[in-house]
Length: 528
Ligand code: AHR
Image (cartoon, rainbow, N blue to C red; front, side, top):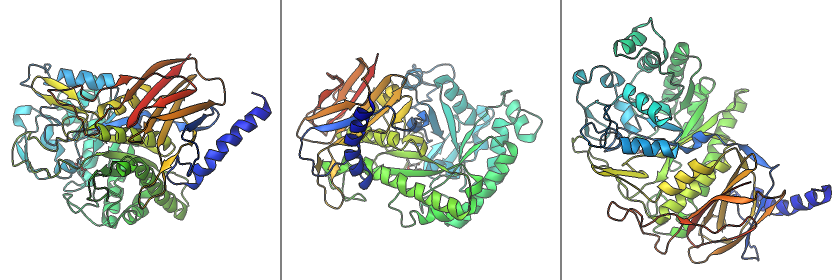
């Protein structure tokens, strides 16, 4: 492209870019006169390489997530290890790159020693996080074996509630030391000769929350995390360690917790965690069944990312550190109907089995877009959770079905590759009380060689929206994959009886002009 035309392209993009920079809601072009949205694609403008760990997930010892979810030795659908083959194959096919385990709240009372060694010697215990009977038939070694079969990386949570730094470091030694020490030899005694080489670790879970076993003040946690990290690094200096950040922006200690924690342990950790669950009712969000507001919550997620990154950078500057922390958004999802979580001292009780509808799926698509757009700072993110408990996959004894939220997540896993493009987007907006104008069209895109994948959320509940795509260079030639999730009923959901009530449809795409249906999430992957 000649110099002039490049300049004119960038000028057009800059018009939208100005609105973009001025508006924390990222893709707005307030008061646009046109009803068509415009997306400017310039391959030279890139946010960052996409770390696929941003599409991770989470499996906790909670309800039927592990037992009856991924591990069910009595089932006709399980292999010789007791792993549900159908579930394992599905997760493998999805390509989930990293999975957090074993909790969650569960981890803060968990003794990992209960879950290793001969199964008939493992104690049956009361899990005090969920008031559930835990048989310990599935533990560290089973999880790692399962991960290897799935082709995913383990992200291990550590008990910093009732647990000590000594026992956290012992688990690292058990997992990662070759041999010749107390804990590595115990692993070998348990029949596992080769070390597991677990690299990714969370230093506790939601320690800012009064509900958390072992909850403590920020500075105390920061010092404990520091001690823990120091001992763990002595065992294995190659670890990547994540400090426990605020469990939600709604916490009274939000940001202050993160600042104080990092002031104590900044130099010993690599990242900090963020969590958030979103609801379409009055509690917490103020959106009482207000779908227009609900569908903008992914912009709140981006805001949270910016705020926590700001705290990290503040502490970095105060400490004159050269190290920049990355973020681990290791619990996010829609979750508000099945709260509670009293397991009534049962084994594998039905807990937190949220049923997801179309509007939930659209927002999950929005979250995937936001995580891509913040690939410059977020290195890990986990859809919480993966099976049965607030999850895209629901099992029974005869099989499983895919919940609505499965689709946007699976498409991100399938199509998002390479670098995230820094799009300029011009979109008409709508008003929601208390926040800046919300763009109808929310987009993220990745580029891998010549292949481009674009993910488009249309928040307009009534109207299809025309979208013009303006390419800085010649666009790729053909659509390789092009699907949309939409439907007339935002409250429609899938079930064992009607597993395809909300299912993807083929989307008729072109490289320059498309029309996205109302209430929709669309993915298009182009290549040559
Ligand atoms: O994911 C369910 C629970 O939500 C997790 O155990 C906890 O960390 C969070 O509060």
